[in-house]
Length: 420
Ligand code: PLZ
Image (cartoon, rainbow, N blue to C red; front, top):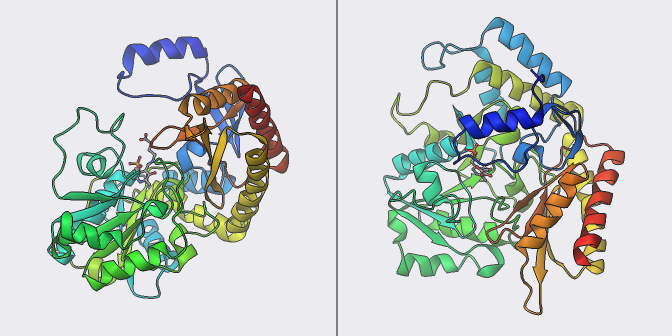
């Protein structure tokens, strides 16, 4: 590894990787540690992307690496449906303990976020005996047929990939309208008695780092429960400490019927889970849920190490501290640069909305320009949003003050350059 140059690897990529698969950068990464990425040509980058919210505790955390190595030497796979093993049941117990709600819970393991969202929908349909699902504008839930249907943005996620899955309905999110809009949806779109679940990202991720107004989820969930509808929290991007609490929905004291986790759960090993009320999780017939790799022993060992690191290294406090530093700087920039509209998100899940003109139109080109400027200066940062105009920070919580300061200085210089 590492003997081919970036240029040679790019050629291989274009020759052999489907053109349908994108990459934000053209740099091939060779190694990564903490909040630093190194490419094959020896360049270093400060990582404000975290592999899209996967590396909350940092790249190659020694505890996680040790757990992966130890588990790989003992056992890498049997398929949980053939021979169960200890790491999976221990992790399930832990997830049942740390997810919100003081009631009996159970878990099921899957490979990816999208697969876990699909399973949450299957379970909700089974339990309620109802077919329909309600999701939101700006939602992102994945790229499989059902989850791309649930995802809001057409290009690139849905374009020409239809026909879509049936019985998926949508309503505006957050400030756009209050949860009482649901009652309108019940009249004009889908009867509540047909709705199995409302699926929501507590803080929307790909759609633009949109946090709901206070009280939003409490009211929404009350309406759901008054109508026998389950509430499913997609915590794939907002969870694992990103907003300063283990799960973002905890900010509002809401206890979801089902929680979906993935991404930072196993620090880069492919692992996802649906965790929720035992009566709901157990309603499905035996063998109704599963898959070859779900809850792979190495991935589960990594996740157990991640949860130990959260406790032993007080990752939530570090997330809160990171969020506060980002917010202070972002507020200064909001005063200094007219390009910046809202400061989006919550905790260390923070983004800058780019706008221009008297009507504060979305400024997607400028957001893209800033990300390109940053990459050129050694800072990797991602853009999101239905309008592509939100620059978001998903830096590992273990980023040092010096690295953070360096990264923010690059962003600030970029903002100055683009504003001129
Ligand atoms: N739910 C809230 O953020 C994944 C996707 C990037 P998978 N987000 C990054 C891209 O362009 O594919 C995500 C998410 C939320 C579900 C998912 C899907 O998780 O592990 O990518 O399937």
